[in-house]
Length: 368
Image (cartoon, rainbow, N blue to C red; front, side, top):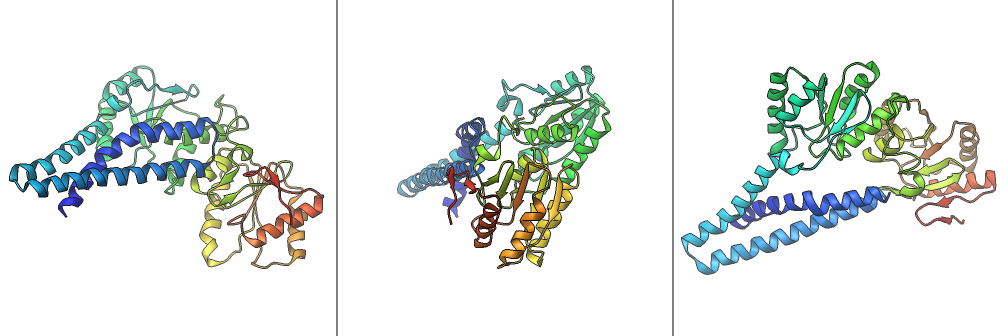
């Protein structure tokens, strides 16, 4: 138990350093070079493993020092030192003005500006500049610091007489549909001037930036971070659940997208049609309903054409014929592009146009 407490404190302290420096550097590198989500995830996992191993080694050495010396002063020091480091890390997180030193806000349009967490002085400044509201993406589940920062922001906005709109987000690991709907309603109303922020002003705000660009239909002057000049299917090459295949010009087969992939390529991308081949069984129903609900908010044409496991070639050919006239870019997806039925679907599609699908992960035509 004593070792575990030391490890907890050391892990939090070292985790802070990794989050603010190597992890942030890695994520920025991946996104600036249009690498895949899988590549980003692998790097994050590697860094987390390094954190676990290094923090445990340090904790183990401190614990052994405590056992060898067998003195009360050493015992106290062995727990106080990691505790002080953890408290220092927590205090750093509780002072976003230090963490975000040098970070700047970015004006998207006359209505929206994005940036990092605003201090009390920044909130007063926003009020003077004519901002009518602040949209905070901080989430109370990000303990221990975001709940406290939300409370501080509530007090500061109340004193400055500026509206605080709460749209808590945990991108890519939670259902953010309610918060995105709140922001979408504000975009569509076209009223007010808003400052949108998360903690660092880098990740969650970019999800919102892409949503604003999508909802505005290009009329806001906001260029989505995920567009033809940035993250495309060709540059992504694969999704988390499998490789992406180019079946024809502007026709792709992907695995079922994660929340991040869905936001990036379906809600904030250039896709005009989505065809889901998932069988309508109990296990798949929640995924189907979620996709229908989200795409209903957009101008993306959605078709659910269920193909049961082991469907006949004739059934697959009828699907191919049905989707050929849908608006493009067109995405066809099931659960994983590795499944035998999906390989067979690609084969039948290729035979119908006399053209082999390209596996974008390897840039090699698929052979059968």
